[in-house]
Image (cartoon, rainbow, N blue to C red; front, side, top):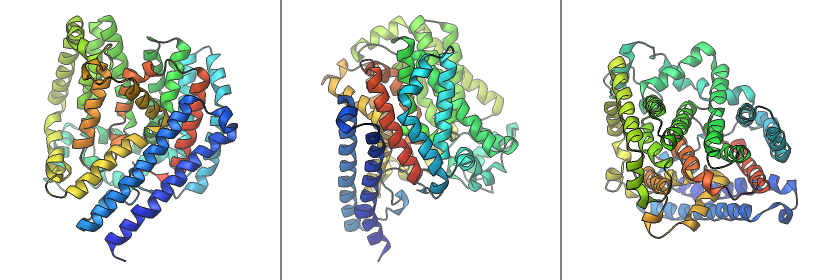
Length: 497
């Protein structure tokens, strides 16, 4: 059987069947909690139906793409046979991960009691941080046991090879750009090393001093701090208990659970800090907080080029009201927004002066290296491959958003107006950014990882408002459902780093 034909068979038959098995298995544990009709609320039914329609659409897309590939003889092997989400390999450590899978299902079953204990804690923010850390650690253990799961990216040989070239001297920033451009050998082995600023590699190198497990555990503990920050932001619109409920709904986003142990979690954390500071600064017109927020944004840009959108994101996702009120919003908060822009630019220039690293130059080099994946190229050179990559990018972002996030998108669409000027500023910003991801992001998939900070932006800008009408009972059932869904994905799939 030829390579193209065997790939088509995998895409048309084996992969859709595997996806259906994953989906059905993810529903089963939640059904064991109680009878179906007693368990499911209206919101959960919407989430279930939305996921079923989504997976059905995925199967239809696979048939279309498979037929196009067979007709055009286009080689789509590089996107992986596990379309539509980026999957590195099956989870070969599934046996060692089964006890942690069972523990996570137990957490899902006992979730109402856990939330009740959290509500009665004296230090609720600290308790939320500890709970988030515990869930993330248990979830990581599903990938081959606690040590392997927590160590994650910090044990990958290709990263270890690249870290041999990393140091904390000023010269490294210049050498990094030379290696990315192919002007200095030996070249980087991992594609991750060529698509991130040098500071991201320097943080990875800390694993050599701390050890992979300690570094992975530190990553999870720091990332768990995002959720108390989100809860704090949510208390502006809701009570303390409501804010914690909102943070717990965000916690069960599959993409954040999966990639919360990767080095990208550091940039997720900085996005959460920037959104929190931006909300406080803009709401109270506090200039000094805006100045600090600008510094955090500049630091996030040194970890991933995607953070360049964080400055407009902070302005948009913390803005209240519809899009037609944008001029009024800009005038009312002109001073704090100006300080935010100036402090971000000043921090970036200060970093460039200190390290010699040109952020925009580095991003331009990355885009040049990956121009074959860009919109202007794939439309002309290989449209079948291009369409397949774009669909994978979209579906990776949507499927790994999970049922809770998907439900808020459904609610936003139902509440949406045909006139874009009646959209909220945050919703309009999210539509623009997701369209950009779908059309311009290089490569196939990985959008849920590389753009995981957008889930935080959506939750701060729209999720808090959209979940206000959810009762605690509904929220708890949704968390149970989402935890089971995420656990089954983690059990059978190695998403890689």
